Image (tube, rainbow, N blue to C red):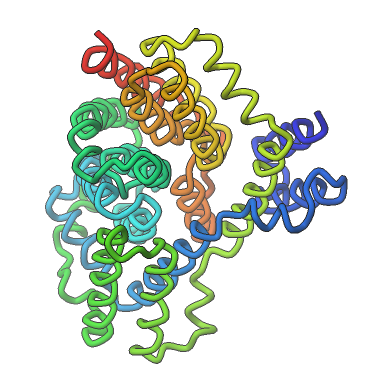
Length: 419
């Protein structure tokens, strides 16, 4: 009960935003240690260093790439392609984000797309928050479509032996539908914010994108390393390397060939975001250690009586709601052995359960600002640029859209696998 109390208090303080979320997460983690709920060694094991390494490596690469002016170049190209229309730009950026998230991972994608977005909104003199929220949703939805798009999919694919093509064949159709519906709703929700005067549009159309590139030599080196890093992500199974290893190798190689000053580059790393993740991993790790997450999962599965249809539906909704409020990585890690055990004991076809878990865990992360890694990264980057995305402002838009997405996923699962 103590661990649950600390978790709920920490979460309440994060929602209230009276204290910085990094401070709250670290305090919650330290209290777990001081009360002996977790030992220091257990707390270290609870931290997902693969996620942290991936974030640090990509932040370094993006930090160097940003110095070339390439983000401004793509910002101008995108804005001119949409004729300076904020609504058109939002849709275009969301589509780029969704596609990129399917073939990279959603964290890497938002690290690349946010600087582009901020450059566009600054030129148009419009509120960047609608664009950033829309891109978070697009990143998590797009990442659901493939094996490498989101950490839960990587975990499920590795545990069950599912291929890249398996995920595309089974999840891409519903992801396309959810993305289309989400874009239409976002355009309607933000119809008043997505307005720009003729003078701002004219400034966009008058810009020359070629003038934004500041260092062509640095751009060639950074682009090469980024391409090699992305290729590494796509081939990580063959290479037998974790994504953090690939990202950190890319960062180290880029620092070597560019001779950039490490101290300057490390200033571009979102350290408050990283320490927020560390604290959150430890808090959720404590819940997992005392058996709270396992108890919730076992109770949910027991309620269905072992029938495939009700179990798949329950897993979809449980994982969606849980992933909106608790990091989806430990939840998925707990659910994987339980679903395997159900298949072994009851002779159940577990394939629909895996797709339910993937859809619920990945799309459920859209529910709140701390529901997925990409959400926290975007909030941290926005804050660093003086833009506040409050917990409530994000949730008011994102949570209803997440529920609509899960309803569509529910119908799809029942039609394709359970009817």
